Length: 142
Image 1 (tube, rainbow, N blue to C red):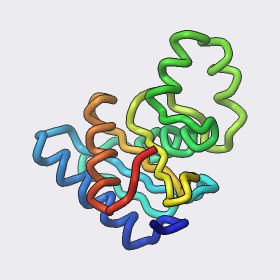
Image 2 (image 1 turned 90 degrees about the horizontal axis):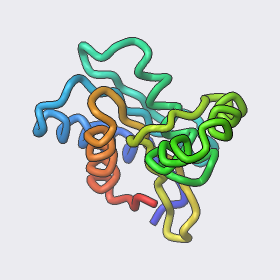
Image 3 (image 1 turned 120 degrees about the vertical axis):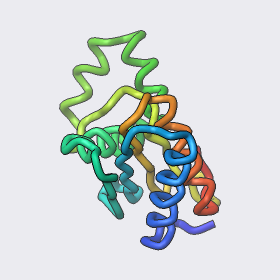
């Protein structure tokens, strides 16, 4: 396994996430891939996706990295401890989006190599597309 997500892998993730969305007949998706530091490696927004989708996808992906758990877990944390997650949301530069669709990618050593965030449909469907993209690129979801 690689210690970083390459641009080719990031583009494959996006392509496969969009393909999964088309297969499931989902609303227009936006996909961001970030490196281990939460910096954008690649982003694409399908035709018809709203303009705020970059921020939402980035908040899912970078937020997952910031807390070390996938954005679905951040959503569970928000339900259990809303004041805590609200207080955290202003700390990371890209914010936190407490909804499924942001998944950490881990390398062969078990450490994060980056994360993927998908938004545009229901959070559950976003996560399905995220996982499909990661798998298609031959990477491992944490």
